[in-house]
Amino acid sequence: MTTGKTVAFHTLGCKLNFSETSSISRLLEQDGFVKTDFDGQADVYVINTCSVTDNADKECRHLVRRIQRRAPESMVVITGCYAQLKPKEIAEIEGVDLVLGAAEKFNIVEHLKTLTKGDSTKICSCDIEDVNTFHASYSMNDRTRTFLKVQDGCDYTCSFCTIPMARGKSRSDSVANVIQHAKDLAATGVKEIVLTGVNLGDFGKGFEGGKKREESFYELIQELDKVEGIERYRISSIEPNLLTNEIIEFVANSRKFMPHFHIPLQSGSNDILGLMRRRYRRELYAEKVALIRQFIPHCSIGVDVIVGFPSESEEHFRETYDFLHALDVSYLHVFTYSERPNTGAIEIKPIVPVHIRNERNKMLRNLSLKKLQYFTEQHLGQTRKVLFEIQGKDGMMEGYTDNYIKITTPFRQEWVNSIVEWDLR
Image (cartoon, rainbow, N blue to C red; front, side):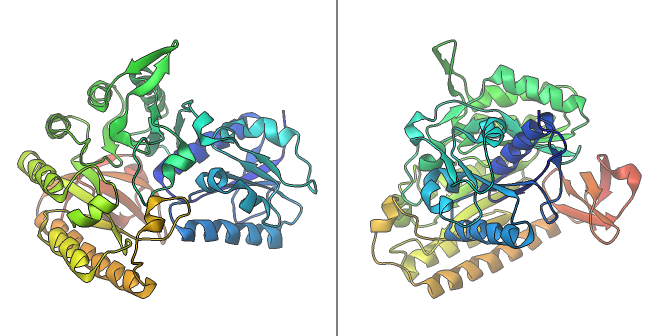
């Protein structure tokens, strides 16, 4: 066991990465490491990377340079999607000591035991086809809410996406294991669990006792709803073609699943959806939104959308803008397309100039602000339940209503990790 050494973490990317960083942190703490702040001095720095956009890659390199200036004798470990996709590129960054691919990140304790500062960078990676095991993870940053990983990998072949190359085939935990994790988390005082995965609606694929396991996301949420102690669940993101009518109806009648869906769209143009190799058309997306509104009128609906995909003309973008403008959704997460090596989209022409991509991003972000303002105003005068989190900045605290409206108010200790009836005004 290591004693007294300090370790600091930084996470780039999605909620799934945050859950995995937290689990890696617990592995090191169990081995005797003391967790410390990333902006301070540490013996070991661990950066859990994303590689969805080029900016994520650049941010990783920037963080390594910062560590080199502050603590040149410290060990630097890079893991996550960028580490799986481009291990040799990362190994060439001055100051990086260890690169852990998808199959090795949870073996970090063993790797650190044999690592010496000054040796050549050690790369521990394998072909993504060989990554087929599922490692359960959950975040424990505070008692209020946790991100619980229940699924990993993806069998889809979207032309813009590197995630299948970084995380492998779709696989998941069992319903029984997830239920046990939820019970364990309830015992620690966690009030809200956010279910996370790469392709969450594809939950159920896996092997148990050498046999193929067939379960479903619908079965999972039915069982989670029965767990005592957890008061709230959220579904982090679910593909529209996997968001079944029975899931929507279940959430509408659930005691614990919050009225909140986040559903990737990516484009409101069927031509672009086809080039993206998405598994639905805009008509199906509109049907899902309409059904949610029918069953859960007060539901928050978030949308992922990509602008500037290759060959996206002004007409294609206008289709997306008009579609989203007319759609009864609550907010948008807008991503600017960036070229990723070894993806199908890299071959599609013509390329949209970067300045036009940025203009379209700004237009949709402005639309998102209007959508969110309208959604919030619709609920003024109502009383909704807010789960308040720990103290924020300047003596304030934050929380979210059941339907994901953010509330900021002066800090009150008795409200931390409590659900409070709140008058929206």
